[in-house]
Length: 116
Image 1 (cartoon, helix red, strand yellow):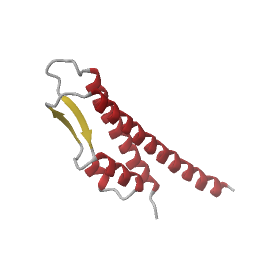
Image 2 (cartoon, helix red, strand yellow):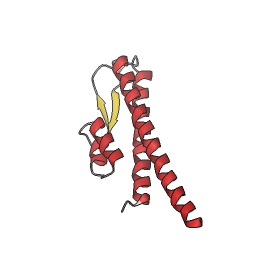
Image 3 (cartoon, one colour):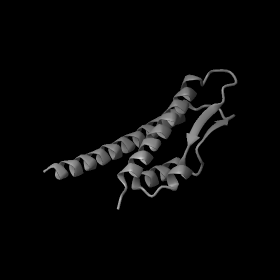
Image 4 (cartoon, helix red, strand yellow):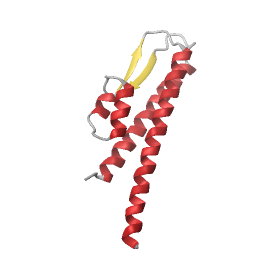
């Protein structure tokens, strides 16, 4: 049986991680001409890979093999690549919000059936 509390908790955590990655990516675009700025990124697939929900499995496949870390690199920032990553991250956010909506709808249905 699916535990809605665990599903909501894992989806909330995924939303938090996606939001943090968005901040890092947008910071890269905003600072691409700043001297000595180091590119940042957050990847969290090991966390998501350990969860058995289809949402987290899909997110883990998209995000790559790294654990939850803020990575800084010396590589030059390519605006096209950063914007592409922001778009991918936005799609992941949409998937996660739809999952949360689905969980809430399921809970409302169960509550309404109990009141009927």
